[in-house]
Image (cartoon, rainbow, N blue to C red; front, side, top):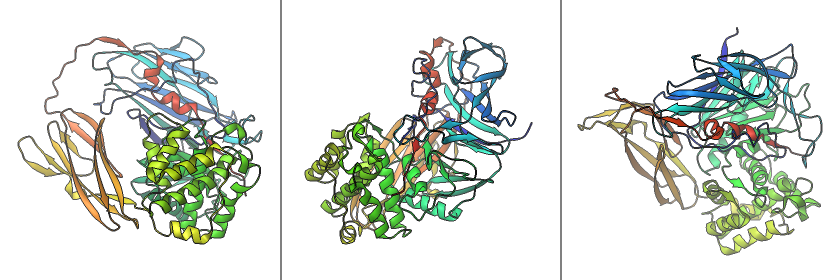
Length: 581
């Protein structure tokens, strides 16, 4: 047995947004099964969990397939568990599971760590029915030397005894048997180099396979991603972003880049940075989109990713304005120019990318001009990410108007509900609107300010991943800096579990202010604190661990509760295709 490396752990304690921007969805879940319904899960637990580990391995003797061994570590309160395998799975062995149906396997209620091993197809191709499809081209593939695959999804349902309805955590992790790396939805199996870079509260993990030859230097890729991470002040950032450079020597990929899950993406190794079609940034922008579009607002997914990729590449001085101009100006060409963005059935020639990017840019320009740079499309983007439920066209227009004027909101309706197309603005117009950076806020945690106060009033300084005891109060200090060029308003959330408090304010350019937050931990467990751009992992230990629960048999309502977000994540694979202008 080769050593296991590349472990990724996902605690299904927070509902995650599946990365969107799909030109060709790929699904493997059965909507009638009950396994694909999301549910809330706990925000804290004390080892009382179900831990599902999927270990992936290549099968050289069977090209185009990988093997998945799924094991479960179960809380003592679990009395029954059923695993549901992917539709195309071929079971090769089980331990502690017996077959109930073609896809469902029941735990024998005796084996401490039951497992099921199955083979599943690794190759996935572009949907031939999609608007940008090219039959026979790959989204995921297994080769003689390596494999770039989506992680197969195994659902679960269970019954348990005792406790509250939401106090049993479901933890999903992926491991690679041998060299490789895994995110929450994508894995690379094979020899590689792993490069890491941390910026703005995010860690970028860049997987460079031995078979890949990067067009751009690793340092430059990190610079471009870091710039986008800092520039996009549109809500919470993911702690980690997995980026895989897909080898192109012997594979005909169906797309230039693909993003799926919360923050997994791959980009062809030949993709340059010095182009308005900066695919590295385009796919990263998808990881920051947290809204649910309807058909009327679906255009925003690719439009904003395409626009910001070009804008940030311009602002990094990787391209000149005339390249930026030529690229966005393609939105004025037939047939995409006459498409109605709110009506996907009217799209031709990738209208959501081309016309959509031009419309996004024009609205950004108008937002900046009408507010003297206080608002921008980022202001709207941030509101979209905070929107509850699906986003309608009228909802989008309302957010645009709220960030600027009624007239700009009406312009948003005009350019998205009709075939009208804005003209590309000049370099002078660009300088007038974009010359000043809108208000942007940098949140800095004072590492020396983390103080734990005991009930008796005694205080101690703790680190960034402290261990506290029940009854202690954690206090920390966060400083807000306006690093933009205009005055603006900010929101600073402080989140512990399902409790949120928010500080607001307004700062001039260069101005800063400090806020203090405190929280008393009344129960033991593992907690995540989010404040500004920072996330802290807190462990709270009980002084008296002699507690007893009264066992009460509770059956979870169908497969949906158990699978939590697992099947939802596997339900959509997002593919973004580009065509050169």
